[in-house]
Image (cartoon, rainbow, N blue to C red):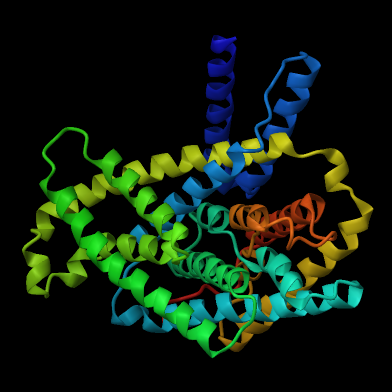
Length: 392
C-alpha cells in the first residue's frame, strides 16, 4: 500500500510537470489540467475500490503554504525603482477598484435575493472578487515582460488587498472610526515587524555556513506568516516586503546599512533561494489543485442552482476589468482575461465561519466561477495582443 501511494504521488506530479512544460504552447491553463487530473485520480481510485481517507482537511494546509510561496516567488521577481511607479499605481487601481465594486455589488445582489445581513453577504462575496496569483503568475510566463510584470504586481496586490479586506470585514462587527484606525494600526505594526524580520532573515541567509540554509529560512517565513494570522495582522504584507527586499538588493545598495550585509555575496544566495522557492512553489501548487480536483463532484460543476449566478459573476468581472484597463490605457488583450479565481478564493471560502456563510455560497458556486474564469483565460491567451504593453 505504501509503495502504491508513493508511486501514485510521483506519477501525478510528473504529469503536472508535463502540463507546466506544455502550457506555453497549448495555451491551456495548467490549473484546468490539474483539476481534471485530480478528478480522474478520484474516479480511478473508486474503480479500483481503494480506501482513501478524507483529504478535505489537507486542502487549507497546502493552500496556505502555496499562497505564501507564490507571493514570495512573485515578489522576488519584481523590480522596485522609480521607473516602476506608474506601473505599480496602475496595478493597484486595477486590482482594488474592481474588487470593491464587485464585492459590494454582489453583497447587494445577495440581499435582493433574500439574505438580509449585508455584512454576511459581503463576507461571502469577497472570495469571488480576488485574482488568484497562484494561477495568474505561472500562466503569463511566456508573455512579454511588460504584460508579465503587470500581472505579477496586480495579482499579488489583489491577493494581499483581498485578504486585508476579508479580515477587516470578518473581525469588525461594524465599520466606524475605531475599527478603521485599529486596522490601520495593524498594518503599521506588520510593516515594522516585516522590516525587523526581513533584516534578520537576510542576515541569517548571509551568515549561515551550514549546507542546509534555505529550508530554515522558508520555514521561518511560514512561521511568521502564521503567527501574524493569530494576532490578526496582514501577514502577506510581510511576504511581499521580504521578497521585494531580497529581489532588489542592487537598488538598495546606496544605503550604508545595506552595504553591511555584503549585497554582492548575498545576491548569490538570493539567486539560489529563488530557484528553491520556484521548485517548492511548483510542488505545493500542483498538489493543491490535484487535491482540489480530487474532491470535486460532477454534480457541483453542473449545479443549475448556482450556474446563473456564476455566469453573472464572470460577466461582471470581465466588464469591470475591461472598463478599468481602458481607463488606465492598458491593452485589453490578453490582460482582459487574465483575472483567474483559484487558490485564494478557495482559502477565503473555507475561512468563512458557518455562522456567516449564506446558503447560496457553496462549493458549486466557487468551482463554477473558477472553471469559467480559467477557460476565459485560456481563450484570451490564445489570442495575441494587438498592442504590446510597454513600461510607462
